[in-house]
Length: 128
Ligand code: FES
Image 1: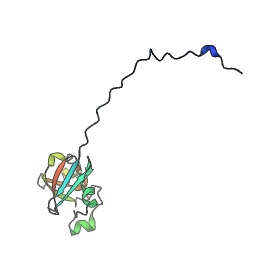
Image 2: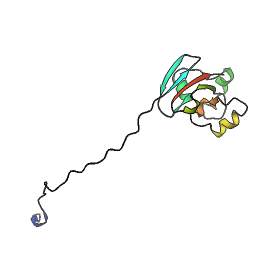
Image 3: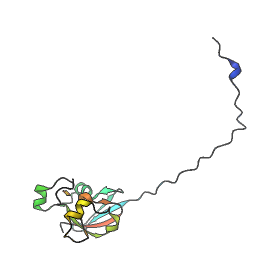
Image 4: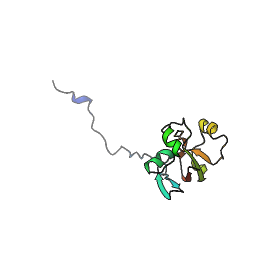
């Protein structure tokens, strides 16, 4: 069986206009960093990194003796991962409802590391 030649039209490439697709602006990469003041460690983090995970990854000890034995592993259940934010509180995610309850009697600069997401430069004091 032969294909029907009558339906095929030659393409006129001269009449085709070049289509310019506008580039969508890419969001600028924003890095974050965490300065663990007591330990003297400055750690680069990606936007939205979990503060507790950054500490654990960089061998920064967040827990007191009791916290070492009893911590919940970062699930926001125990309240043993308390840190003090020395600088850059505005670069962390807002306090969660659990933090509001657990840190009710603590200074406003205290956070639970496992509940805080880093969005910029912060300085942290562990075991305040
Ligand atoms: S590790 Fe348990 S609340 Fe943060």
